[in-house]
Length: 215
Image 1 (cartoon, one colour):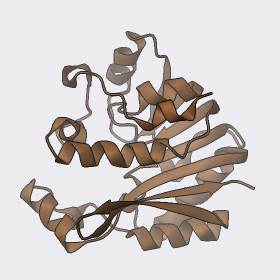
Image 2 (cartoon, one colour):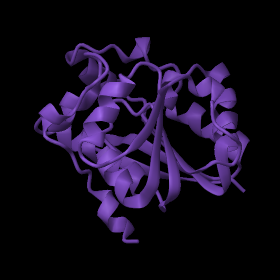
Image 3 (cartoon, helix red, strand yellow):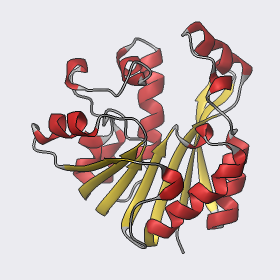
Image 4 (cartoon, one colour):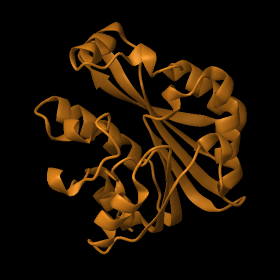
């Protein structure tokens, strides 16, 4: 399998996505300048994936990753607190991309042990409070096969980033409860050794991708 094909994010036309509510950031992927940043963070996560039989995306939203994941995995599974499961599933069924989606909470993973080749979380873990992080990561580790991957992406805490989000009408302090350092420390405690890739910005890293393997 040619993993390099998955590194460039493939998007549907904007009208092809059905998002859960007005807070879904899918619209940002099509904006000048900001869109390139949004796409790049997803591409950094996708580049870490090795492929396999079955992947779970936590917080799948509108299914922005699904065109790429279809090239690497036989089955795409997703869990999301608020996404419209039937609407998103129907959109990709029409494209010949079957999905296995459900509403649910990652703090109580409704999946068997040793089930997935990979679990993907893009801009999800920063929304958990520090005291929830270990529970969530233990649940992810449980559902991964031995040798399975956890790949996550989180923003790097910076004042300039917080200001940029405020200009978009989004106060991250009301939504981001854990920093990239807290996420990394919790992942190390649950999985052991991992690796990091950072997305550079003008004044330093702005996004961080963690990669861990269940031993």
